[in-house]
Length: 212
Image (cartoon, rainbow, N blue to C red; front, side, top):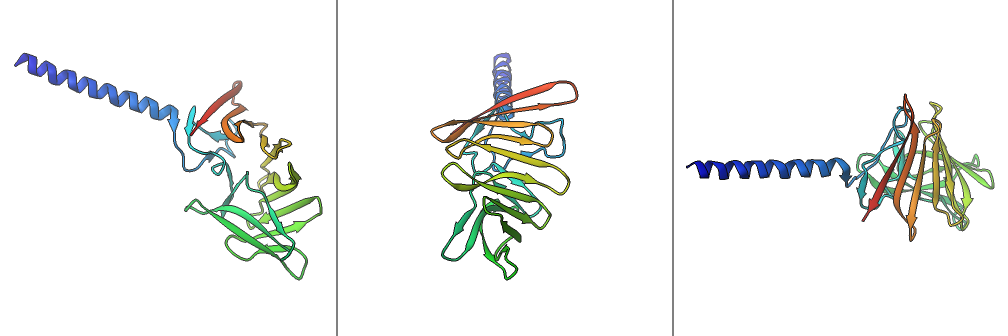
């Protein structure tokens, strides 16, 4: 009888240990469907990330606004045949990609005809897209001539600056609180994100490894 009770106790302890190991793994490894941005809390890193992240992060790297999020890797496209622009955004809670079509108005600027409303002004080398909540996206030609987002400014005064490599890959993100994110690449795919920030006491740094 004593041996049976001891066997049951050992099984219970083993099961509890397995749960503890699994819980520990969940705290350091994650597969995300979206990224959490700490835009207003400047004592935290710009992104809330685990030490190890599974999956593809390119489409998740989307800066949030009131009506949509903008995937930073997506370029702004222009079609000379229709004199129109197209902009890819992540729409609402569905987290689905939507391509906005922006057509020229009689006043000379462009505006979206489907989905979230945005307006576009073409200043030659620079192109500005403004959302309804006042968030302003500034695009410039980088890499192979594609128009990529170089900065994002919100009405509250927060901003995000985006630097690129000669190949058109994001090399660094910087925000209005002097926080930075530096991606590491392998064959054009993001394999790490190194963040730096300053909390109430000292400078901090965190590197997240991105695995398939």
